[in-house]
Length: 419
Ligand SMILES: Cc1cc2nc3c(=O)[nH]c(=O)nc-3n(C[C@H](O)[C@H](O)[C@H](O)COP(=O)(O)OP(=O)(O)OC[C@H]3O[C@@H](n4cnc5c(N)ncnc54)[C@H](O)[C@@H]3O)c2cc1C
Image 1 (cartoon, rainbow, N blue to C red):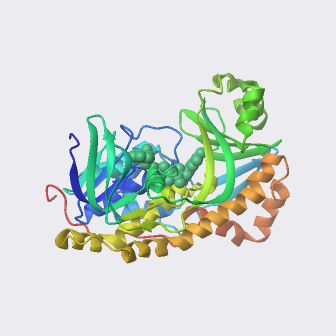
Image 2: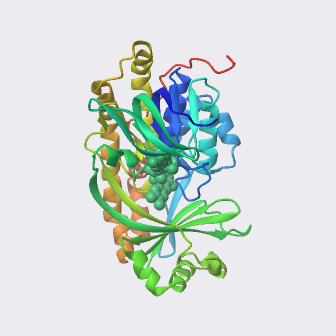
Image 3: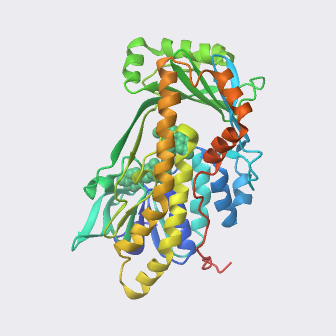
């Protein structure tokens, strides 16, 4: 479909987990929604690929759990840490009484394709890819739409509500003059692949730490997805030392990959992600709502970001579908009080999760990156969990379910073909 200047009840900016899920839920409730994504597709590597038990429940409530499990995926019932060569368990989802007692690793592009394909079954849904939002349209002090760059030129989308789900570098945050408060977590992460062999250990996801280095390795079937974590500014130091340093560290901390380190040919071509944790004081302005990383950027620690983004989307749909259907009938857009309810609902879980991530960075990641032992070493941590098993259960529940899990409360207004 060629993008034309258009109107919709809602314009959602950014088809990441937050925006795609919100667009699906609203379209399913009968709201007409335009979803704008600056990329041509979802085929980007090294994005959060974890789908947690609470998101799986949401998919189940939408009737999508079956199709989701048909996607190429790997289930993770436990998560491990290897410190100075000693393994230990840091999460176990099996004894939590969950409907889906595991985290699923699924390429994010498959997950987003599933969500947007489902949304496309509803008549109110439109997806524009290669539509990069460049600014807000305003009238009488409120947002009334966006401007976007498309291959066919500049277009406008006018809407009763604009939802910014455009991630941690949100253009709309800047356009609205809002600055998030930095929560002081900084880390550089280099991502790369190393091939996997059939006789490699069955590690699924493991954090390996030692000598001031942290690797997170994830089994992606035919290859290992490796994150190399450094304190902020670590990348500049690594560039001075060269790729040889990275290869030596990999061989030392992940010995079974020692014979494949030359697969990392140079540093320049590897994607560098700069981790940050921040949060807006107010997640809304007249006519404009922020959700997901645009409202609160998350660190990868614990893999909470995708899950929180989906939870925000579910809460926003539950609270706003009614006012948005009303807006369509009356022409009166939802007021600030309706938007404030979304922030009130999600504020506490977000703040507590971010505080937990900050604590985790202080007591674990930062110490590991300084070369100090994390919480007295793997042996001491294991015996702490043995002595007080509820601590492991708490950590597992926090990781798998999070705080205040959301459920789909919006109705299904019927599909395009009535089927
Ligand atoms: C190194 C790293 C690793 C991570 N790993 C994990 C993990 O394993 N598990 C996990 O749960 N979380 C992880 N996270 C966090 C997670 O990626 C985010 O919290 C999550 O993606 C937030 O989802 P979102 O939909 O809010 O934003 P995003 O996923 O960032 O999606 C935003 C979307 O908006 C689009 N967009 C941006 N600007 C515009 C524009 N101007 N116009 C149109 N479209 C636009 C983008 O292309 C993108 O598709 C990681 C983060 C980092 C930095």
